[in-house]
Length: 487
Image (cartoon, rainbow, N blue to C red; front, side, top):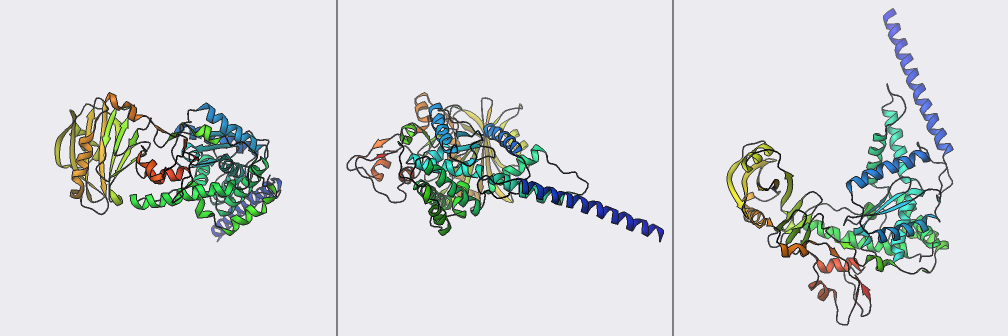
């Protein structure tokens, strides 16, 4: 009986200590919430980090971004974006912060803001704007996420839940690594409908006070909507999922009544555009699509100057040029061939390399040769299905070819697989020009020009007409008028 009483006393004491910790944390949360006023609304915010911590967090994540992404090498364009952003932030609710606007050398249609004032815009998104007020609206939208502390609020809610669920045996606190991890998740998942709408309303305010037309936000959304529609079409063709800027139309489509209400509420700020539109002068010469650093697609051919290699896709197959590999995709995405590269680190034959990396018995193996380079191809099991693999040794580089097919037997595209491998060769001197990045050219429409006739002369790979329309805000069926400046 005495032993049971001791056990009960220990349990009661443990429960008391646990409740005390929880109540202390709740008091701390309420204290922080009551002491933190949202700069935009003037209402109390539930945030668990100070402004100094917010700035430090943003700075640390920005360093990680720039380790993974290259800054676009055009100082005049970078200065233009920074000056445009600086003008907008002066009109914001947090003009005390130092904002940094950086263009990334990435063809994706994307932009994002980090807490504390780091804002990144991809050149792929930049290329699709047709007026400075559209660009200003998107920059102002990202500024709105910073001024309303959306990422900090999301982080605080996540952190509060995590602290309460892991409180037993732990002291209150979090490492910088935890912060970066949670913040990364918030950026990927997006901010949700209410926060995106709030950022849109702030974008209308900031850009209009800065002298731009109040239509900039709606026009920018039309650009993004057209891009999303095209992405859905391409994704169906490739058999992959669609990714869009902030998942923007999952949260607030252009015809959303709430979005229109937000814009209407901010009509007090709207102006007729009073600024000189300088955008096209900075877009002229902007790299479009593939960067020469990652190799360039032209038609069904792939040219990589730095690696000095050439590859070609089978008829009707498409190539996707990713940062670390090149994908060949069959019509409807039924089959894929991935080409990746590795450095040779062991003295071994191509067959021994394949056996080592696949770690299984290979079948139907045979020695191959492409442009004089030694290689080996075979069949292996992947997720219970046969898959074709091949490797080519070139100097001290290894090029690995791996296949994948969801619905088809491997034998149905063995000829295409072999044709991709046999196309592999050294880049010729007279092909170096073809390995240079495509660049945007500002062009004055002539009488008789149509998107169809212009796309016939375009070096853009895959859907050149659709892509020219997207670049100029005319997707899917806009018309060209003589005298108009287009990209």
